[in-house]
Length: 252
Image (cartoon, rainbow, N blue to C red; front, side, top):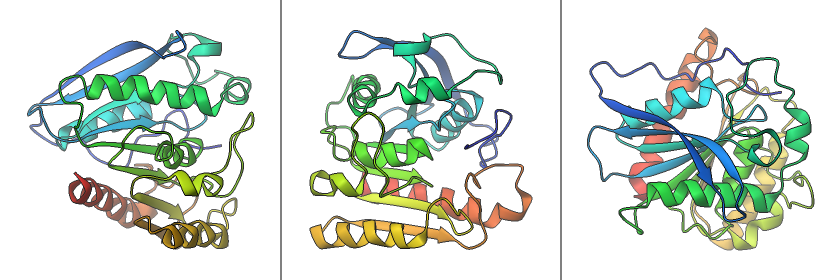
């Protein structure tokens, strides 16, 4: 399980920032419609990012995160994974997401990311574009660096680097030869589901291929630590947000 339905990203709103937001229905290359949330900064033309949620799909946490990116000058589209099985409507805390998670495919997720990327690059095909994801979305964010999107970088919070994906999908480690952009990983040191040795194995494989990467492990931080209600992990959250902004700036 990843972020609770009532969780909020550990980035407070930026006072005085002007952000334009819109619910979207996008169409992937296979003709499937899916929900997305678009947040545009006051000043256009900067870098952009596609937000990949955890297993719940698109909900308030990721809409709020898209707005925080826009407040920081990064245009953002947060996507939903479940257009093929659950439609485009908003969902409540009782949504039974696991059957829909199991119905996802690597090809479907990549097609959805490509549709979001098309929105963000509508006026500039060479615009610096990043992905960021959490848990299920964390590993899928790294995988997008191997999916032909011409990314400037891919960021993953507590994604599993060596576990194979669903429906024939390879792990990020299994796609390491295809990774074409720098990677950033933000991991919880107390996350028992993702051993540090597995993270180190992925980083070593990237190093061997000459792919720029940085994996930060926050001692004592659990899975899903990037949550505004976790007072004891505020320092880790602040550092993670700073590293994301630095990573985007350095690779744009």
